[in-house]
Length: 580
Image (cartoon, rainbow, N blue to C red; front, side, top):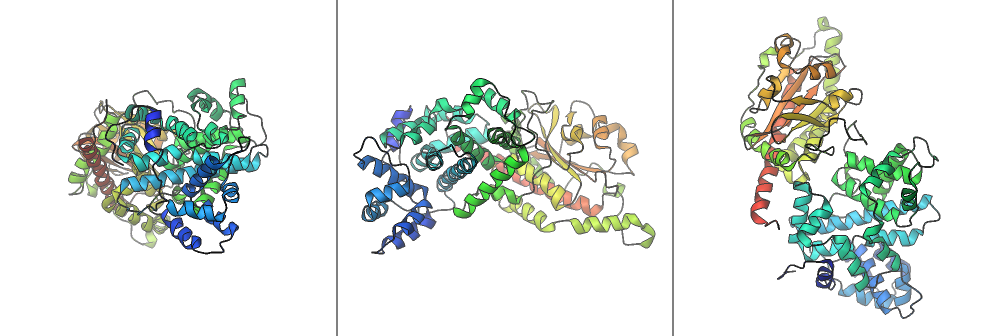
């Protein structure tokens, strides 16, 4: 849809897009078209097909409520709508709906499908909660949660340019989502959804789920997450007004959408695990049980609604999560560097720009601060080496080179598959631990002024929280200051550690208790973004040249991918005018 004049408030947006015909999903549309040609189409078969497409469900309920002459009743579900309208009328409505001619390279198409997927996931989570709370209106809750995302569906279909700007501000500039929406659209999408609900005569329960006032404040969310019980059945200890909020029949809708959004951003991120803790408090179960229920609901909805070319809710379950899943804010987190992997944009701009320099310089060949010959030679199978040789062989056998190859290939050839720098860094850290079988790994980001290195992404550091929370002052001369000056790789081992000891921060030595580790700086556009760290942990085996070879290959691919994000950001800034 071409927008000649940008609307400035929710009412104008709703009136502009209310008549926009949303396309059916490609996979269900073909089945519906085939089924509707049958003269003796059974009610149950038609209902089953329509249930698989949220757009078909929305238009049926919308049309049925508009045709309903009884002011005392409302149509809440597709089944009710079909029984009221009849199969012939449903056939007529379905034939009028367009089908999405999917172009996988079209960002608007992919984001439209992703918004549908997120709504389906939110509805599945709300439905799962209702299974354990019999007093909740389960059917109404499912459909109202699903249709709470109607505004997103319509906006991605009718105003993709504006939505891309909102997405840019949210994911690239780290602006709060509602603030970004108000900046670009003049209102929130929830406001638009409320107007649409009234214009379309959606059920009262559905319109209530779209009300802004039912959302908890940030302070209340913190309170709820901290009240997650350690054992099941314990009543959460929260304030009276917070308890009133938890008892609202609309709270599962909010929580379902929160879980869908945070799992889409990062299934293993801290914000998602805060949402899990909120789920645990609401359901009076511990964190682990809450996570398992959320996981099961995500798997089920992914199986029931396979949507092409997007990340299904269960996609991240296939990746091995980080060992660190903190709910509380780390002690070192200051305003300069927030607790979520969300550095100030000047830093992340580097994180995207930083790969550029790293990629161009490091891909051509690493400049190793510590010469290769300083490290121990690759161990060979020799009975005289005894246990050490056996340990090296076992470690080599544990490498998951298929995982390593797939990730580095995606970094080099398909960087667009990573949502942002944060997902990329987390994937690199997981690959070092689980792909290369190194005991501990981390990726630390450099702040905007280049004076501080803060650890954000970790794997294998559950037993060493000081290492996971490590902060290094880059203004002090030493190894890490040199790493932040240009793309360098360093291999610290038993041979060169005594000579290098004075250049290695004492905090790192004390936290790691290791004299064997790799470090590599990641650059873009000649600016430092991050430093990647890996060591052999407590296993007692020396790192090998082969370990270092794989580590450097991964870091080169990582740098190349970060450069892609830097270039993408520069392109977006040129092609899109961010409103002031």
